[in-house]
Image (cartoon, rainbow, N blue to C red):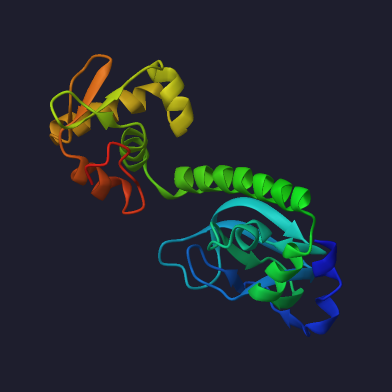
Length: 220
């Protein structure tokens, strides 16, 4: 990262006003933003918000600091929205220049950065998923993530944890989890009421969870 710092002077500084959207989730960008001064909110914008208001805030970045450097290290799109809370002075560094500087680090440092970035990304995606999805969508995604092939040629999930522990992972109350599972049975998306849940309609669960939710049994 120190090598990247030395290149900052080559990129012109600019100032943006409060409310400016600096990053949008899952939107491609060809630069990495360095915040020289000011505060930026990280989180999830409202579904129909064009005014730059974070509906669910996950954190703050106060300059001097890199903005969502995790995405740049992993070469993926941002997992969060970012909005200026104050007037912000920043610099845009091209993604290729940023990654070229990372490549100058020793292999051990690169490996460490990747491990940290992967762990941070996983936690961020989990937090965003909990904020952006309702209880049914979270439950459907959890079922798909834990699915395995059944003897009947379909998909199933073995509930190895107590419902209270599963509910805690999903960020909902155990009573809410029971209600959601009952509703999914009524919709004929799942069946079974014991320790094994059959995924009757994995495609339907994916429609509920969102297109990015993978089914681990491989049927969809």
